[in-house]
Length: 347
Ligand code: 1CP
Image 1 (tube, rainbow, N blue to C red):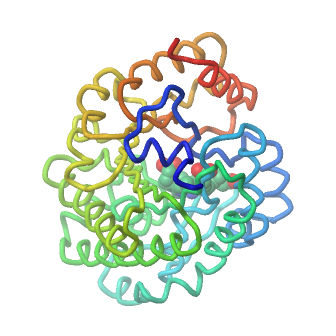
Image 2 (cartoon, rainbow, N blue to C red; image 1 turned 30 degrees about the horizontal axis):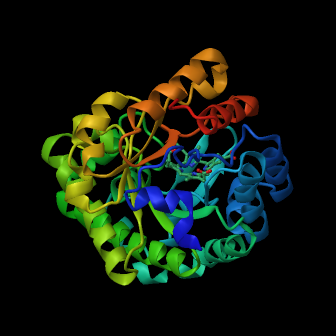
């Protein structure tokens, strides 16, 4: 049956009259039911590591909107934590981690093979979801791409232009490369275990790929994505992979060819007609409605939804936002987007 899931059909290259749809951060603070479950869990990391609750928040947007895919509820920063970094969420301030600045910091981390001890509850969440999801809903597992994860491990927090990571990359390339290698290896282990637990699609989030320019983009965005994709496909033949080199701009062109991913997720900075001509020619694309429309709604949301669906209508397409939905979004606007799309946006 799973071969007929709408999302998997697009990933195999099928062009569909109405594209499959889901949203990045679809389980999140814009939903009152998410806020209630999060309050019950106590804090964000408890929510990630409590399989029943993590499965519950994964299912909430599926119940409400009938999305074609559910994305595992977890976070990209669980991998650094499983490698031995300290991780905490400061109230109202976002994530904080212990930092990697010197060879001793890297030496103190655990080997990639040790991550499963910490991450076992995540695999349990996936096993629950394989039982509880509607049969037409595809289950997406994910991880952060090595560069993006490294930016948090080096700086200990989110940074506007990833300066600390660029400084280490330039100042101590041997240490930086060893860190990228460790994260790459851990990511392959982690995603492989997610697939064994029931993930049917893998998404690799390279949220900060846009700050890598020229050759650095090829070395630290393309190459790790290629290595991870090849390893997953060797271990799990046929597993589809979605790559998201956010902010890649013209570097989106050829990304699927050079990495082997089955689909490229587009942020909202690229024009849909341009991407249809230059990126979708290589296969499936995902995106790229600006998340702001989920706050503002109205006719502009309807028109943008239709315009994007139309621009990508000649090739395989997964409808999504260009980045995660924000906490101030109105759940009614999400319904309006889904209705617009399913009522024949291309007509
Ligand atoms: O308060 C809360 O409830 C925490 C907000 C939150 C949520 C809902 C965080 C903290 N993480 C998540 C879940 C999450 N994160 C998912 C779950 C599935 C989904 O519904 O999509 C996923 C896929 C992520 C991925 C993630 N985490 C990324 C990559 C995607 C992106 O948004 O660019 C990144 C960069 C993170 C780090 C992170 N985790 C949380 C925050 C606030 C951040 C960003 C920190 C920063 O850069 O300042």
